[in-house]
Length: 50
Image 1 (cartoon, rainbow, N blue to C red):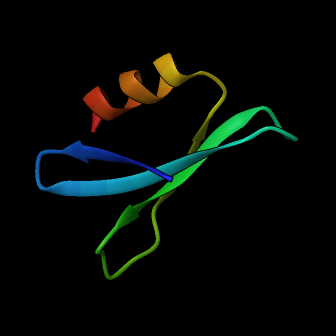
Image 2: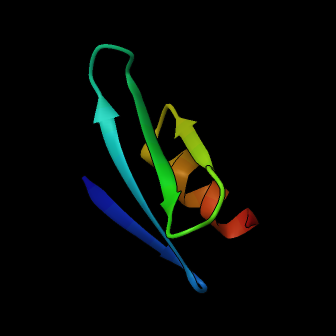
């Protein structure tokens, strides 16, 4: 899996070739936060919105 860092948050993501999407989760939280995007550019864009 690949890692994302944004401010004090860390996440992991992977590509699902069967569904053609990137999916992942934010790490080290007391809650569950997941995400999915079709293109890597959308992942980068969503990271800036947080």
